[in-house]
Image (cartoon, rainbow, N blue to C red; front, side, top):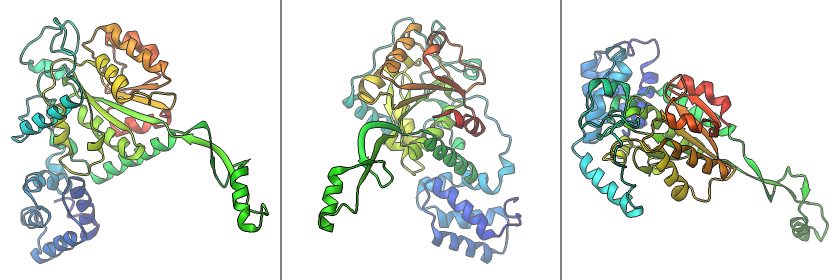
Amino acid sequence: MDALLSPLPLSERLAGFAALLREHGMKVGPGEQRDMLKAAQALGSLKPAPLQAAWRAIACSNARDWRQWPAVFEQYWLPHTIKGTVKVSGQSRARRDLRSQVHQMHQDMDAATAPGPAQRPGLASSDQPGSESSTEPTPMQRAQGGAGRDLPQALHDRSSQLWMPQDLHALQQLARQIDQQLKPQPTRRWQTHPQGRRLDLRQSLRRSVAHGGLPIAPAWQRKRTRPPQLFVLVDVSRSMEAHAAFFLRVARALAQAAKARVFVFHVRLAEVTPLMHSDSAAVQEKINAVTAGFGAGTRIAANLQEFARRHARGQLGRHARVWLLSDGFDTDAPDELAKVLQSLRGHGARITWFHPTRQRPASLALTQARTLIDRFIPLASLADLARARPLLH
């Protein structure tokens, strides 16, 4: 048990473990940490089995906590047992309660907006137009990517949520630094500020009343600034199954640190900003419910049009930043994406495209719209995000 044999005191290692448990929605506070330390001292053993059983009874307060405990425990205390494991293919089975979540959330979405336009005849279930449709993708197709009719596998994979505390801290720190780089833009309005350079005559006269009419407490003004409005749109299609979970984690950090509005899209678009601000471990299941049941193909152009007309109407000015996280495969007509991006640029929005590969996406739609995108940035890891940070402003 490498972590328990560390030279650090057990109390410090338990503090890090408790932070990881809280990240996964478990209610572990100072009292539970104290009880876990007492249990370890009472057992007098650093063997995993007895400690895991004792700590599990202390930390888990419901069935969901009980089910996810083994994976979280092994990730922190027994990393050597899972290091280097790679999942290359295969279908994941939906949770038993996912069907009711899908039904309820899709009812809410349908009540708020009309269903997305039907897919045009001739579009296949692949992300690339013109590919042959099939009801079940082959293993090679799953490995190469392509939208399918099932829920993206990455959104079912709980292992993508088992980040170590230092990784979560690094991501949150990067998100805060990115937020600081999004410089507020000055407006034509003025506001009272002690370091302003323009005299606020009206406020100065009001203050002088308390001093017998003597203007000994002048008020000053400066230009009012407006922070950029950040929109993050995450592709959760089949071709993004290996990257969607990481992109959603990045989007969540940006939502919390930079007040970004987050959307997920496949053949339909849904806003998940409220879910991004939740600290519950059930966030992933809720995102699953939003995205489950989406049809074949990835309609990037249609979803961007829906985003501009309905969700971001009136907010796509020169203060807006639209960040798209996608591989660029679009089943809409190739020229549709350029038209939508041209409309966004016409409102003043700046567009950044994050892609999971080292090379720029080579889809026909993106090739025609490349000049309308301010910047392409590869994003497959925290290191890529750190390297891209100076460019995000």
